[in-house]
Amino acid sequence: MRTFARRAGRLLTGLVILALSPIPGLAALAGMAMLGAGPDVFTVTGLAVFASVFFLGLLLCVPRPRPVWGRWLRALVILSVEAAVVWQVAAATLHAPPGGPAPLEPVAGQREWRLATGSQLAYVRLAPKRVTRPEPVVFLHGGPGLPDLAGDSKFLAGLTADGYTVYVYDQLGAGRSERLADPRGYSLPRDVADLEAVRQEIGAQRLILIGQDYGARLAAAYLAEHPDQVAKAVFAAPAALDRPQAASFFTGPDVLSPRLLAVYTLLRSSPPAAHAFAGDRELEHDHAGGYARLAQRTAPTGLRQGLADSAVPALIVKGARDRQEWSAVDGYHAALPQAGIAYLADGSYRGKPYLSTLRAFLAGRPVRTYDGAGPPPGYLGPR
Image (cartoon, rainbow, N blue to C red; front, side):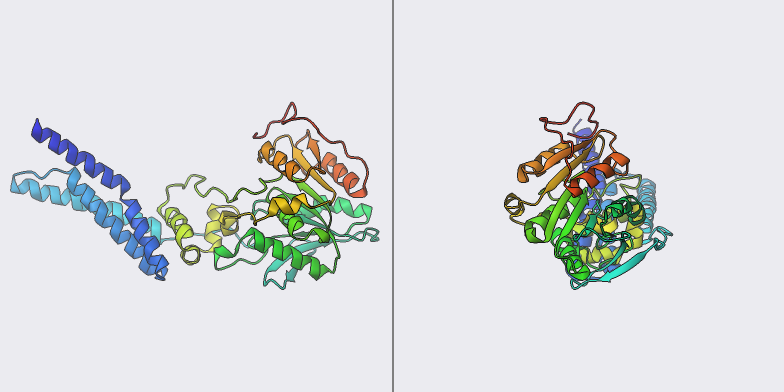
């Protein structure tokens, strides 16, 4: 009985070590990256530590027989399993998947800004037949890192009928704009600085901002920092105002891929090493939005206080089925009590009801607003 308990304990310990063996490997990988080692060195070090710990787990799982021939058989089994597993893990870690997203083709009217911040951003300028509105409209896409330059330009061209010049652009690290070698460069303050540089580049005294999803959060941060440069603001499907925002890394069918686990670990310890290990094209193949979307977007200090001091006309727009929580709407309304809430029962941010709402608000005409407590009947999105 004592022998059985000892063997069972040994087996259980071995299984636990096998299950946890990736952790010390990833820790070694991250540690070497933080010390400045290159991808070849930190990857091989991580694999070597993983292999050593996995081997220890196998030794504990397979009991040592008394006969000599049994010991040789045990050694053969352990070495075979070790070789097969380490070979598979090493191959999956070291070799990037073939292909990747093709470079995006330019859209009609695409141009490029080279801003004072150092950012190079792709944009489209939509000009009316005759400019009758002094403040241009600037659209801020969501994600972060998920633009649709062609689709947004086509939809927002409807505002040019009212005499507005409209600018639609891909934020830094997204779409057709520049990528950074250091993912730490993607941040909400950097996006705010880029937007201010855009204002200066186009020579506008004030901007009309339409932000959607993360773009609404960017619009709010810009409004808090540059209240005198905003004429009006629309926050559509707004992301939470001051909650750190980053996309979930482990999505899709390859959540347990050793290579993606390595990228995830490196992003938390040495983002430049993650970028050196897996480039933009590779990551964007597995994760829409790439490094720009995975970066932590911490809200600047004093965001709510800056909004509380604002008297800029504002409108919060919420669709019946977008992916942002209704509580985010409450957060914006608490920070901007003068802002009305427009509810889109059809749930579309490309439909005629939304365009009509935008045109009415920007022109100063009455907009039908929702004043109820909590989501209205028929709301299908998260609470």
